[in-house]
Length: 276
Ligand SMILES: NC(=O)c1ccc[n+]([C@@H]2O[C@H](COP(=O)([O-])OP(=O)(O)OC[C@H]3O[C@@H](n4cnc5c(N)ncnc54)[C@H](OP(=O)(O)O)[C@@H]3O)[C@@H](O)[C@H]2O)c1
Image (tube, rainbow, N blue to C red):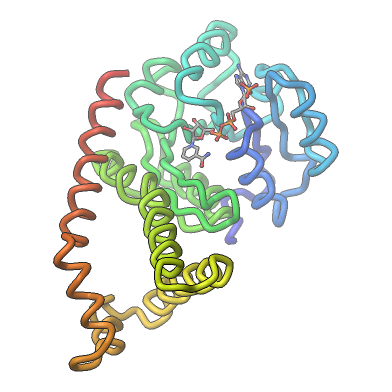
């Protein structure tokens, strides 16, 4: 991780759940624990984060604001308005802060409305593989966020995987592709395992082979930079087994199902962010 923009910054988390913990673990590689503060409604959760990670913990969200330059909003989207209202009333979040929201579906306009337009805000759409340091996040800066602010947020998210800066108009499609994407991949892995079992393979073996095939294939595309079709052609010999399997997938509408899935999820993301 490049940390130039984060050097010397104090980072606070409001909400100490799964996502906050993943980010804290990633950040701790380069950021000292005494620059990281977390609040949560559960004292047991705070005790556990302090014991495991050595970070500063507090039940007081205002204290996190006082102790931090960067504030990561890591509570569930439905509780975010109720978390921000008292902080706004107390004047706890100031233009000197950079506010990074990872709350799914909460728009920049909503954040700027709930805080104040002069507060720099960055909206992030992360995904669950961030929990194992392999996330794919997209982020967009609000009207008061400078290029340096957005870069700082990008570097913070890079602690748990890939982080791409995009216009906010892309975020509904990103939600549908990489936000919901793990569920599509899990479904494929599950189907591959069951299909192996149907053909007589022991389940444990089918699971190990299916997982390694998915991981290995993704790594092939990533490392070679090749179009997936180039790699697919290489393993599809004339009249062979793979082309028989590929034909069955095409007959089953595999490709158009993926298009339909991402389209349906994009529409739903649009509805949800518009209706909140
Ligand atoms: N998990 C993911 O992979 C993922 C992916 C994409 C986006 N996100 C977004 O990331 C955000 C966090 O998700 P998560 O999975 O980390 O959720 P989570 O595990 O439920 O974490 C949220 C934490 O905030 C605490 N909290 C609730 N109200 C609070 C308050 N008023 N002040 C301080 N802390 C409070 C919660 O405590 P209680 O549990 O006691 O309520 C919980 O510990 C969400 O907005 C979600 O949309 C997550």
